[in-house]
Image (cartoon, rainbow, N blue to C red; front, side):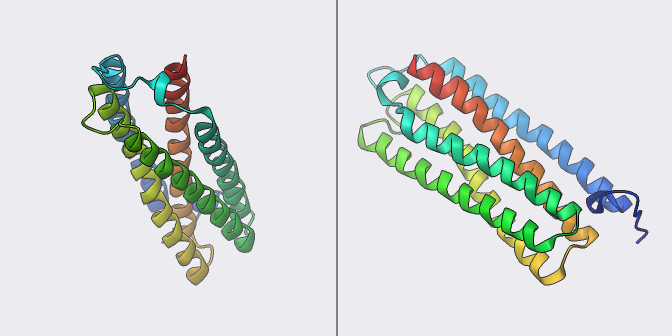
Length: 198
């Protein structure tokens, strides 16, 4: 394996560069998935039948908490990648750990939000609006859940193997995934919650 020391560690081998390109292609498919969910949401948002509307069920406090947690986690993982690039394994692991804790906090708030929706009668079978709302939020939440386990496995690998081209590549790709989830959440916050509260 030929290592190019003039490049950041995550790009330092040809295989690493191929892995990153492949992951960008994968994110393109993820954009299509969420694009389809958003298109379905915009089609069904006014199909509430006898069920509640967004204005009736959305509450700003949990949504702001979720947004702050996820935006902060995205900033923190950026610090983790910076620490990785300067070879500071300990700082990188701390920043990644904080990112995962913030992600877990986001997921906890979202679970309570889902319980609240079901409790007030806004379940999957209530209306087309509540079905697509919970499907869209649930798909994003499932991605965050997957990300928490993925990030944990990366932390364990970095702890065991140190900062190598392979662990740096995995860490960088994970950071791209985490930033992607943050961008999707910004769309959810803006076009689902804020628009729904108006």
